[in-house]
Image 1 (cartoon, rainbow, N blue to C red):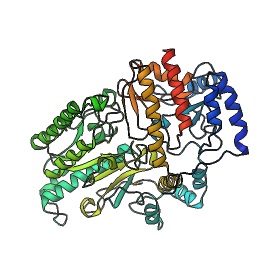
Image 2: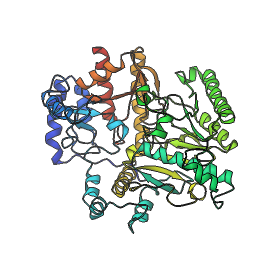
Image 3: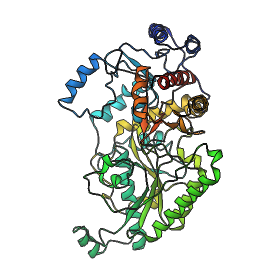
Image 4: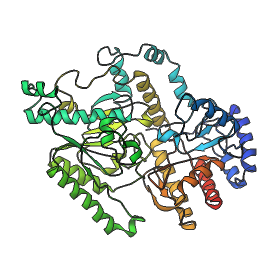
Length: 506
């Protein structure tokens, strides 16, 4: 990839930058910090130097009016804030009251290269995009003559090592769901004697009654605290919060304990190693004894919704070995970790595996969705087995290509690794100063995929908005960082300064 090249601030940027400097100073950002920001060229030339706060509370009066209008026709009880995307820019999210917050939550980790990115705006205006939107094809039956080239120049160009095919999908839940289907079909094809062996009459007849052997007694293993989506199959592997699962029928599928590491890691190395080995032993025991044999094990490189739980490369290497030993597929759920946020393009690259995962699912920052796989093993033996009307969206695949071109042009994966080290060090200093508020700091060496526990987490998140930062949580007590790939060191300075003010205001 080419060397990192920042986009310089031009004349068009001057008015918002100067206005932001004035407002930021009046809200307590240090003059030294403002001077440091003024000396930096952001990737997005129209970014302000610091957050802009125009109302005493968020939501302000205009936002409140829009929320009331919306709640009559749409669910708003999970609302974080109402946004004005026409005024959002780069790392900053705007609201209808004119507030402009540094956004380190980024639409639940799904914005890769900033709001209103000029390169993506150009992609949106191309004839190729217009064609994809207004002539949206049913890809399984009527793919465009350009579909192969779109895939090869974007989604497949950045495929994980060893995986040469892709099924595109609509969202992360969908991606995981069809990956599960692939695992079941592969398992039964192997048990049947190979892809050339046809279904028996008994299999065909019993499948229509939802009974074996046509509907086999198989499962997908996941881990406690995992999150893999909210569709029926993916929901049965989601174990992070009861609110996702209550009242929904579920498959009786196994869950293993994900190792709960203790921090600092260097002070608990022996204890953590035992926890990881206990988890591996449990995985193997469940594979050998569960009444519905697992066709696959699905795992997140970092358990995101479940509390930002990490494990060592050694853990994942042992997990790969156990699945290979028992002929069980390994699915890496990279919906939240993919496309550079951990300082690697794919987070499972940190594992240093000899054999790659059998499937890798993706969505969020990709702005598209699907799963990568090896064609020779995991393509179903007959058509229509992985099928729906859309099977993905060429418009989103074009957007993916624009995103990864920006990532490559600006060397954003290496950039994120460096900025992650910088912001981790800054938060580590805060943790030494305020140990009660920055507990179990984790994510070192994982780019900007950083989190810590706070005993007043929900208050922390709400108070952060009043200091110009939109930040999110995970699990029961974690504050998680999910900034965009264009997050820079001066943004980290703003974030850390704001977090210290939040702690002192709690």
